[in-house]
Image (cartoon, one colour):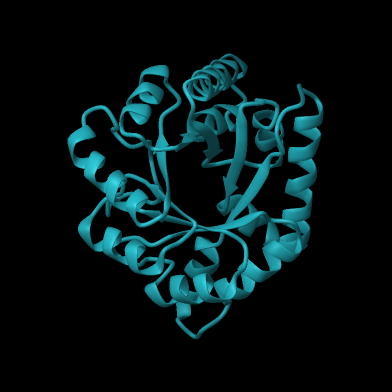
Length: 250
């Protein structure tokens, strides 16, 4: 049986980071979203942080209004963010951990210890007709905890794998890729839709694309960095080709 089509979600957060450096209105993250979709992205991801360090409330409103592709709205499980998601009604809300001191999301949600806090959040978002995703560590027990929360989707944190690959540590790279594979296999077997993201490059996305249970990759920082040299459209097209190549090798 052929593996399902692998979707690409493009995260536009760091276009907003550049804009906010001088706060003169450019580069426009909404324009970036349009460009990514034209180049082959299947959806747009944006993370509205508590401190609004990159994406801002107005960006989310415009993206939801103007972009026809699905919006994957990354948020912390706080009252403020849940209220915004309920108002905006994105296609999906991905619940992520968030600390003001971190430069980027440093790990997955604690879905085991945080069950009692997360359960009503998941129920509320699902009640609003929003597909709920949990950004989690690639572990079998975490997949079980996600299912107990009745979240339909998990996004596996691929950061440890990508860091091992960049460090050229072959043993650790193989170990982390195996963690992703085992979690994806188990999660899919218990009915979860499996996504992955964080730190992915052309090379690492190609490798993760070979895990047949994963149906979506969400990639941002690397694509925006590559856009400096090749343009965003070409970066997205090259990533799409790398993903397709990895998928074809299954």
